[in-house]
Image (cartoon, rainbow, N blue to C red; front, side, top):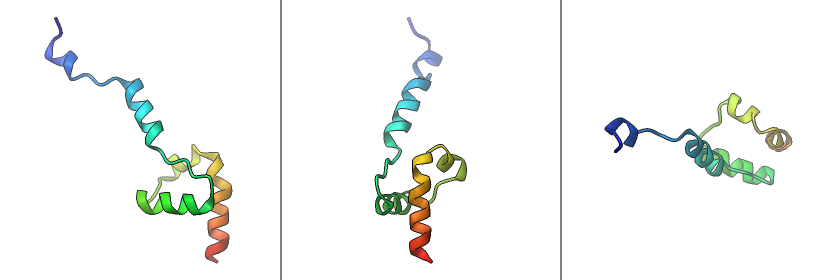
Length: 65
């Protein structure tokens, strides 16, 4: 029999999986732009985890200037 504490316990692997599935995976600078608009912003720590975004960020910056 489970206790109340065990019923409320969160599974870290499930949390990680959902976080990974929910994170945008833009393939173009325009898709990155759309993702940023929806997300409202991305902490640099999070953005740094996604090296594939670097060239897309650079492209967006170049277009903005």
